[in-house]
Length: 226
Image (cartoon, rainbow, N blue to C red; front, side):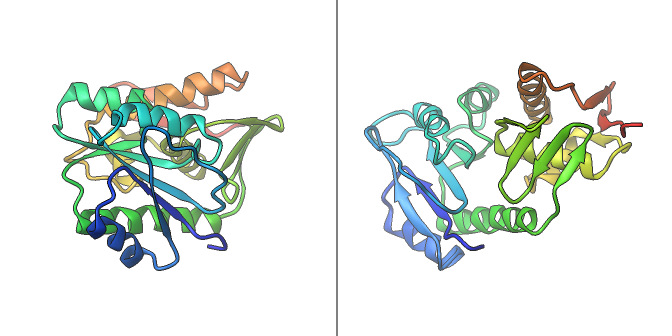
């Protein structure tokens, strides 16, 4: 990658900060709190937000990160205190791409950073994808509908790219969780419905048609344009 990645944390733990360097030597860590204002970050951004950081709730930090231009399209993982359905729902509603059960250890942080970085690298070396008048620029991480930009969050973008790359194939919710490199045992399959629902609403709001068809009791498919 030409630009150094940034890893955003909400705790200034020396062990976690050291883990960032171990995971990616060219990365730099940024610790955010209540009054943080984030400027331009040229490379990919991976955020790991505690459920209850010292100054302000993790849910509020997620919302703020989605508002900053530099982190609007970053990959946000909320670190839960308890892996219950209500916490997972609130995490996704606040703008998190996914979640994991804490505590966030150095080994877990390294594993996640390396996994997300591999996905980012793969996108940067893939061609532009098209489906009808939808265009996905995998290098700029941008979606265009009739040349107008559409803002999709990380998981939504990656799911849409996967479907366009594999038209006419039905994917179960479990397989889509695996596609995103997540642990199927930790992610509720209904979370996939949340991702897909958000993507559909965003596309509809921009005037773009829904590219996916729901296959009852199974999952989703993208029917290739004739």
